[in-house]
Length: 272
Image (cartoon, rainbow, N blue to C red; front, side):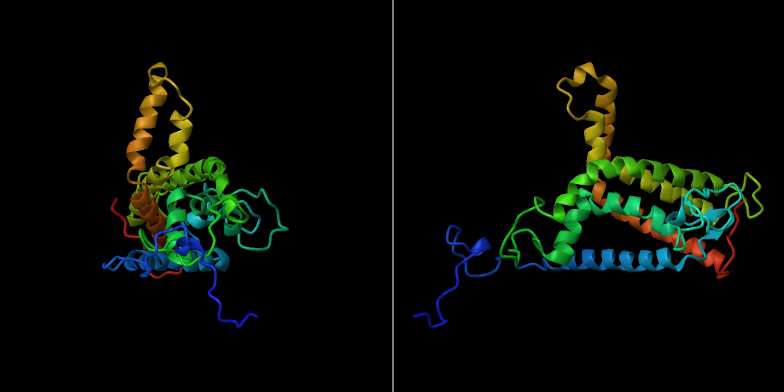
């Protein structure tokens, strides 16, 4: 007769086939600090970007347009002289035009190999840190729904390229003044230039980019150009984590700077 006190079957890292170690881990350092900081940083970006995407205002201050709203392809976009706006969607779209665009860079970043590691550890504790057991009883990897969707990362790379191209166009337009005259540079110009450099560096350091330029080659000697590109992508890939965070911060700062200008918090300092 069952008494309710029978021992429960061991699962996960405590399975009978694994080494019988009583403590959850043997680490003595503050292993929880890295995933906690990562979770806080990602959560801050999610909250900020969600607010800015839905507010649908204060995203254009000539000649700067927020990267969250570029390209602006809805009828309800703020008119931008020479800017990246076109009425492709029509007047039926009543929500923020940022929602039509952000889905592409967010899909690219959300399925990125580094970001997967970051939010798996930070939010799901899967695992929380190296040599620390995760609390989940089962592990299926990315073979089941919804995580199987992560496999679209190689395709989201192709959507990230045109987005980066549009942001490059925005950075070029930033070399105008508020009256759209060329040959001028303000603090916003510098911010937009640094941002697009980091955006391209992060995009091209992606593992998918490295595979596209040099993957499936049996003999590098027969493809010297692709081999050189593969080498460059590999050098960038070494700094993929740093570039992921730097570009995330820079794109947020670029949007925040446009917001301050559009709300009249301060004027754009001009260098020339």
